[in-house]
Amino acid sequence: MWSISETVNNVRITKKCARELFKAQDYEEELWSSLEYVTSEGNLYFNPDHNEHMDYLGTHDNMTEILKRHKVKGDICFGSLEGDDEGSFWGYRFDGKGGMVKLSGEVVYTEVEKTGQGG
Image 1 (tube, rainbow, N blue to C red):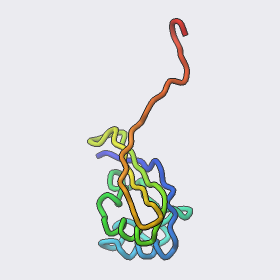
Image 2 (image 1 turned 135 degrees about the horizontal axis):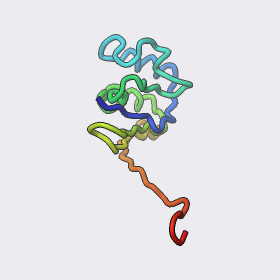
Image 3 (image 1 turned 90 degrees about the vertical axis):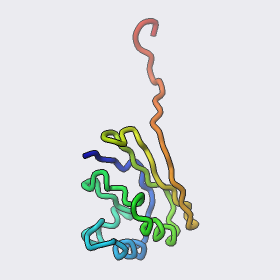
Image 4 (image 1 turned 45 degrees about the horizontal axis):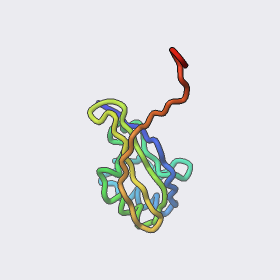
């Protein structure tokens, strides 16, 4: 088993969009057990208990289509620090006009302090 983490999520959704997403689940409680769990503080919610299945946008095209139809705006990004996809970072950018592009990310380290000999 491996798990992923949500690293960025600034996509806010309306109650109407949340209801449509909830109704679009393939089966009861597939992603959310009740309508109130579709959002967290106004943002689309991803359940960390779902481990590697937390990113349902990558496997449920119907969900991304609903978000595009509602013209949401912002980024949703994930990262994997263990397991088969260790070191992978990806996401989705919604443009607020009905479009979406997939994102690929990487971690970059920069020097902040020199230590050791001569430093």
